[in-house]
Length: 269
Image: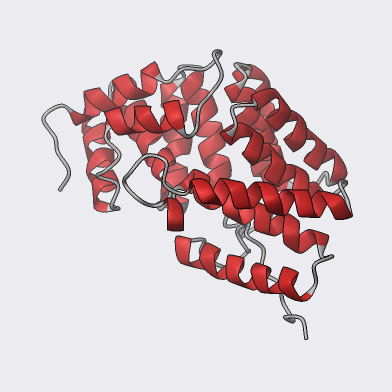
C-alpha cells in the first residue's frame, strides 16, 4: 500500500524546513518510488530533495570537508532521469534540473530549466525566485529584480520558502551594490530561515559594505551562534570555487571583502 501522504521537499506551509525534515521527506519519497516506480512527481521531488540538501550543505553534505555530499548530486541526476523517462513536462522536474545545472556550472541551462518550470506552472513561486537567482548568476541582476519581487508577491501566506525568496532579492541588490536594500532583505531572510548559511554570510558582508560595522559585527556573532563558524571567508571562497561555481560574469570578491571587514578582530564563539 502506498503512503497516504507524500511530503514535498519544498517547504510545506506551516512547517519548519530543517535538515531533519528534508531527510524525512527523502525517506518517504524513496519509499514511494519503491512502491510505485512510475510516480513522476515522487521522482522529481526526490531529485529536488537531493540537490537541495547538497546546495544547503545539509545531511550528507553537512561536513566540513570540501566535496562532502557529492553522492547527493549523482542521486539527484538519477532521480531526474527516472522522472523524465516517465514525463519530461513536469514543472518540479525542471526545477530540480535548474539546481543540478547550477551545480554543474551550466547556468544558462539552469535559467532555461527554471523558466520552463514557471511556464509549466505559472504559480510555482519557488521556480520564479530561482529563475531570478539564475539571472543573477548570468550577470543579469537588473532583469532579476522584478522577478524576485514577483516571487515574494506570489508567495502564499505562511509559505516557509519566503525566507529563500527574501535571500534571492537581497542577493540581487548585493550584486548591484545597493547594500542598504540588500541588508533589509537579507535580514528578513535570516529572520525567517536562520538555518541557511549563505543568507547569513551575505547579510554580514552587506552590512559591512554599507558602513554599518556594528550591525555587521552583530550579524557575524549571530552567524557563529547558529553554528556557522566553519564558514570563514577562505572556506566560503573555496565552496563557491569548487562546489557552487558561478560563470565568469559573476564574482564574489565583494562578498569576501565584506566578510573580512566584518570579521576583523573577531573569531567564532
